[in-house]
Amino acid sequence: MKIEELKSFLESKYLEYCNPAFIDSDPIQIPHRFTYKADIEISGLLTATIAWGQRTTIIRNSERLLELMDNAPYDFVIHHKASDLKRFKGFVHRTFNYDDLCYFLTSLKSIYSEPGGLEQLFVPQVDEHTMKYALGRFRYRFFSLEHLPRTRKHVSDPFANSACKRLNMFLRWMVRPDDGIDFGIWNSISPALLSCPLDVHSGRVARKLGILKRKANDWKAVEELDQQLREMNAYDPVRYDFALFGLGVFEKF
Image (tube, rainbow, N blue to C red; front, side):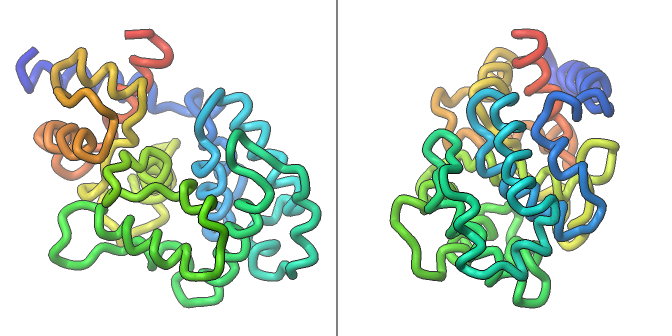
């Protein structure tokens, strides 16, 4: 397909999948249970962090996390003591375990003790045209406290050529304009800078459509796909994540 034909096709699929019904089966339903900005951010980051594997399991374990935080993630994060973390004993999602979770909650408490909370850690500098360096700075700050080396694998690094699928998904949730699915609560970041949350589904569809040639789902592939999506919509390229993901998961395209 020519670029205009492809854009029209992806727009039609965006409109098909970007509707409230999408929320019912997607992990984004977890932060949608809150209205306070910091609750949305914290529940969103924790949900995105464990967003690999079966979506039903991701949602179930995310709900378990909320229950253990008394369904008040910000209040728990900012006020918890080390002894309060014992309630998470036994929590595990694939390779994300109790020790990893305890560090995440401890680091988040430190982050929210400073002005701006999570959002200010992701704000790009004026000469940056992607979120790559902001992702790197966030990761550096997130692991600025004493931690187990094993926990670092749960926050991806674009400078290690990771596709950063879960972080890019989290940023999509926070930054993209409120369209009934994404929240649009981070106004300090332009949607134009976002990258597609590249995974096995969106990658397969993108290759079939001819907008991704690279075989590996890594950061270089993200940059290649970004270039194509920005040609179709320079302001909101990641809107097409709905199309690529929906085609792959729901239509087995």
